[in-house]
Amino acid sequence: MKPSLLAKLDHLTHRLAEVGDLLIQENATANMDSYRKLTREHAELEPLVALYHNYRQAESDVATAQELLADPDMKAFAQEEIAAAKTRMEQLEADLQKMLLPKDPNDERNIFLEIRAGTGGDEAALFAGDLLRMYTRFAERKRWQVELISSSDSELGGYKEVIVRLVGFGAYSKLKFESGGHRVQRVPATETQGRIHTSACTVAVMPEADDVEDVNINPADLRIDTFRASGAGGQHINKTDSAVRITHLPTGIVVECQDDRSQHKNKAQAMKVLAARIKDGQLRAQQAKEAATRKSLIGSGDRSERIRTYNFPQGRMTDHRINLTLYKLDFIMDGDLDELTNALAAEHQAELLAELAESN
Image (cartoon, rainbow, N blue to C red; front, side):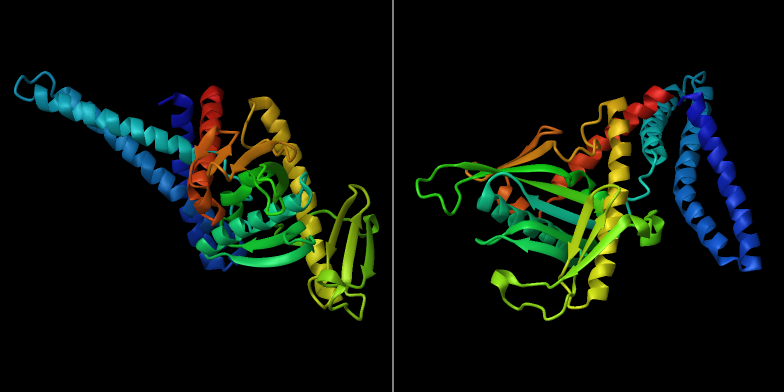
């Protein structure tokens, strides 16, 4: 193991002991905010330090076995012990490096999932509906809560645009690599000659801010309009101006919400989405800057990039960023996304590990 990595692990070992002492002090003074922060830090450091202790123990086992090499009766045993301990050390070092990777502070957050129909007209809108069902089924498998925030229905079904909120621990960590262009190849229901059409949708996955106040939004930068909401085909027209449209003047971001009969609730939901979009814009700018430095394929934050193709005639899904093709499209469209999301996370982790190795 490199000296720089050993020094870092030694420092974190000392920090764990320090945090343990501070926890005793804060518990005595009943400072709950500080106590919670220290408890979280202790919980993060403890498994890392335990792994490091195992590494040091394996290192000690090698040294002990090497002392036995001079004894002819013990030489074979010592060689086996050395080989086994070195194998353990290699695995433990790899595990330690993974645990030392910088954590995405948004990973544990809920998300706003936004799907927009792109090229392809009605077929793109139908595909947007299929994507929404895919993510909803995935959320149900994870026992997450799904809340419809706003939607713009198309005439033949599906959505021109739809926004849902997915509430569940780690939602962002699981779906953060879904942002980008999704392309579908299939024979539309409206196609009479059996020709395959290509349509597209864009997906945006945005971490929810802890609170709207966490994002710096100047009220003077907002234009808030109210209007009457209407259901599909003009039915169930609301008798009051309960629908809300908020325009963030500096960025041009526009958010509408009309799914609740309460103007107050619609405004609160729209503000949450606006905060998430502003936060997302800042995050994407940061990701793009990092991606330019390390030529990342996964975390580029580029919404215009075509990331995936769903080919229905061949029953396959291809993720173009990691050249992964799965011939289980029916299962994927039914929300079986674990193999895909795990592969994307593993590739991103590999990129970060390569970057860490270069910096060390």
